Structure formats: C-alpha cells, structure tokens
Image 1 (cartoon, rainbow, N blue to C red):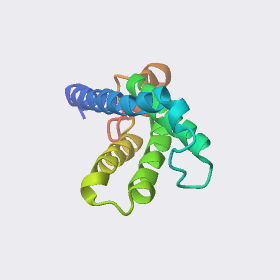
Image 2: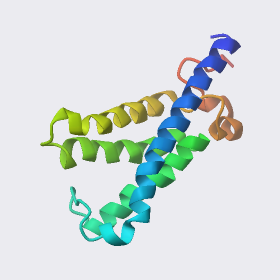
Image 3: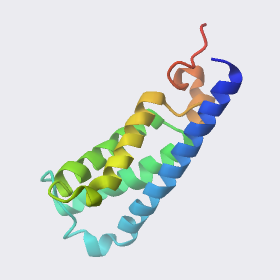
Length: 142
C-alpha cells in the first residue's frame, strides 16, 4: 500500500480512536463523578461486588479510553473496553430490547476493530514502537 493510502487509513483510525475514546470517556467520567452514590448499587453482573464492578468499569471507561485517545497500548486497551461492552450487551442489558443495548454493540464493534487494526501511524504506539503497530496490511516488507 502506498504512503498516501497509509496516511488516509491512519487518519481514519485516529478519528475513530479519538472520537470513540472521548465518547466513552464521558460515560466513565459520569461514573467517576458519581462514585460515592453509585458504589453500593452499581450492577454486579459477574459477582465481584458492586463497588469493584464500578471501579473496573471506571478503569476501562476512563483509563483505557485515555490510552485509545493517545494511541498508546491501543490493542491492549481495547480488551477491557470490549469486555465491558460484552457484559453490558449480553448480561446487564441482555433482556432489554435491541434499542437499549445497541450502543454497547456499536462500541464493541469499534473496540474489536481497533484490536484487529491497531492504532495507525498517528499514535504513540507508532512513535515508540514503530511499524509493528501499523494497521493490518500496511506493514512495510523489511
């Protein structure tokens, strides 16, 4: 793939990472801001306790979203976010109509895509680690 296509693909990945990262960061920030009120009644879908479930959700939604925005440890940061969306989609909202759980499904789709593609060249991953984190099919033949 030529350099112009690589830059366009990476620009698309940058927009996707930053956009979805900021959107999810808003969800996490609301949980963090309301921690005291929510810690005893936050859903506990996998039996860790309400407080720990809330801490894990905040960690994913704030911490991992910040990593996505920066393009740092992108593939790894996508894993807790995808797991959180799997729990939201199939457990917390499992009995709800699609209209309610659609957003979790869309986020899950994005996180799985970022796990597969990596962050692109406009990322700290690329700056620190080089071409090993380029989107699939864009690696140079060296």
